[in-house]
Image (cartoon, rainbow, N blue to C red; front, top):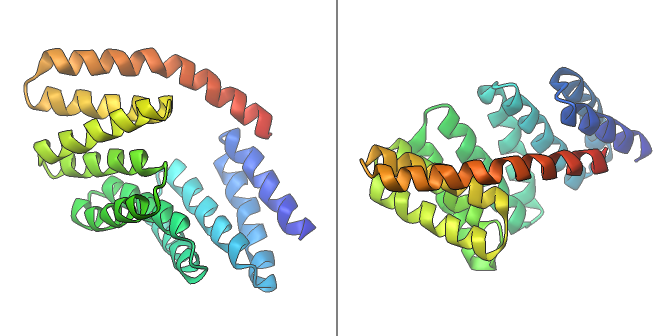
Amino acid sequence: NGIALAYGNIGLMYYYQKEYDKALEFNLKKLPVSESKGDLWEMAKTYNNIATIYNSRSDFASALPYFRKSLRLNSQMNLPAGVASLCNNIASTLLLLSQPDSALWYVNRAVSIAKEINLSALANYYVTLGNVMQKKKNYQPALKNALKAYELGQKQKNPLTVSDASILLSDIYFKTNQHGLAYRYLKKHMQLRDSISNDEFLKQLTRM
């Protein structure tokens, strides 16, 4: 347990310093330790961390198998919140791989689960769904989901979600020739960006 924990923590510290090669090295060292113990929770978490590191390196194709392994384990452990989160991660990765149709199936599953068990992460899933619909050039559904994300993010007082929804709304309004609204939401995004960056920096220092 101590060895697995140490490898995971060292990998996390390297990840926050954006030293992704070292972060990957220590998470890959942790993985066989967790697998040998049969610790499904730690295995699922490590698979997700490895996939996240690959995404940070823009190696999206390598990330997908690890996200899917984590999804299978979360399903096996009957953890609906984990399943929803992994479905959203997979959808986001598929979108980066220009596979919006496959992404749509996963994000719809994430939204369905989040609604069923009342997850606060639903707002983030609406952002992903909005991005998927925008990629498919279905701008009205994209706008509908982006507005839902924006409203939920404001209600939850979550600046990260509001920022993500704002830039999505700006993109959609720009592409539908509503430049005044595009400017309004771009301005909102820019206003939030600096405060979010400072908050995230402090969070990283605290965790390290």
